[in-house]
Amino acid sequence: MTRTSRAKRGVVAGKRRRAPRKTRNAEYLLRLYVAGTTAKSLQALANLRMICEEHLADRYQLEVIDLLENPALARGDQILALPALVRQLPPPVKKIIGDFSSAERVLVGLDLRPVKKGGAK
Image 1 (tube, rainbow, N blue to C red):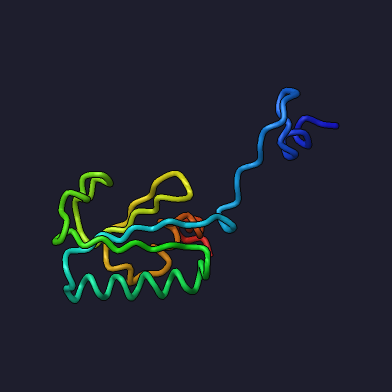
Image 2: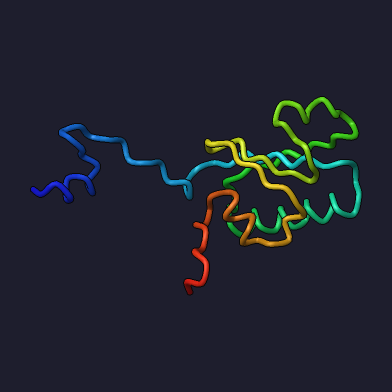
């Protein structure tokens, strides 16, 4: 067996590595931070729900946190701008800010789709 074929199988220097966990089958815990029921907050929530239903189906849990009701909750996830989405699970933690109108940017931010290289089609 050649060295490259061993590496492809996950064997390096005689030790077996655990294969990286597939994100597609993982459960997602998402937190959406908003400031009240403004038009921007409602639009961000609607956009996010549409993206999650289409791409995550029954594999996600979405918590909506209104920082007008409890501003102290922003400290835990270090929220500086709103609306903000924090992916708690699967690790690592990811943060996205905006109205989530671009499904492609949200999917890349959640690691559901790879970043497209510039100019490659």
